Image 1 (tube, one colour):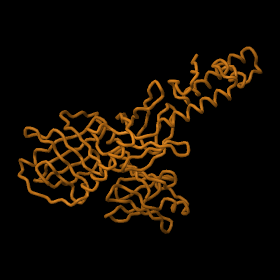
Image 2 (tube, rainbow, N blue to C red; image 1 turned 30 degrees about the horizontal axis):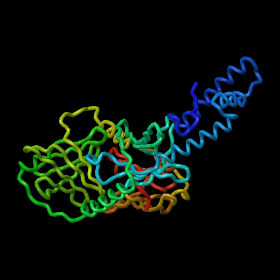
Image 3 (cartoon, rainbow, N blue to C red; image 1 turned 180 degrees about the vertical axis):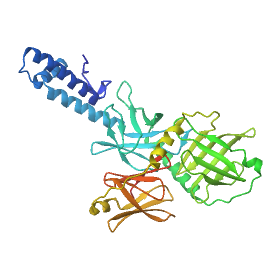
Image 4 (cartoon, rainbow, N blue to C red; image 1 turned 135 degrees about the vertical axis):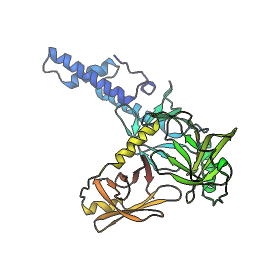
Length: 378
């Protein structure tokens, strides 16, 4: 039998999982009681279980666990960052609003997390699952992020560290947005970055040389041309994003992506694994490519989704309701009608892309190129 500690907040089990276990224990006890007395009630079994754990009543036991749950949730709030050698200038903020945990990155949407049956947390419409690592005293020194089996561990940081990262993020955004001048490089120099780059917990990036031009493509997305700024620095024309390659003994061994104020380092992939993280992205891309079926929604439902949604520092998605239809336009692109396939999910017919609206349009998720991109509402 599981015993409840005298100080519930120090119990190693999640209070909600423990309560579920105790409910099962009460049900099992009720079955035994009814074997002797068919008139036995669940309340009798719950009282017996509560008293066996040192509480006068089931209500007192449940109240203690609810207080424990509140403390557990509050202990999760704070700032968490990835390994700065892998992802710099970025951290996640976890805060408590209205009894729910909210997670938000410096450049992303705020997402409300919902507790799952296994004790982890997830945001509606996204595949990421969040967990919190507890020590023996109930403190939370780290959190985990699991996306399709790719697990990252983020360490807790304090307010001073978070503010320093905010400052670095602002400076990086400014530098990434500045204008750049392209230079010419000989073919042998352009060939040095060619290869595949990636980490075990994220998509890979393929760099190719075609007809004297360098291109880069994230798995499942279209390739984009690169222009050289120096022998090791390249940029995407028209985007606030750059790549820097680390060249050692005439060979590129790693690349860093500079975008949205963050700096992400990806090592060169030496061997190709057919079951790498690209496989999960390819499955999502295939789902996004499948034919969609239009459903009809009431016209008065559409205006709730109208608004502006942030894609990155340079682009927004504008959604408008007009004459019983919904239209979407990304900065620098044409305006297209998007069609409903569910009450809160729409799709484009001109490209294999969909958009899900969360909490009635409080935020959105763009599904394209095998990725799910949260878009905060502006």
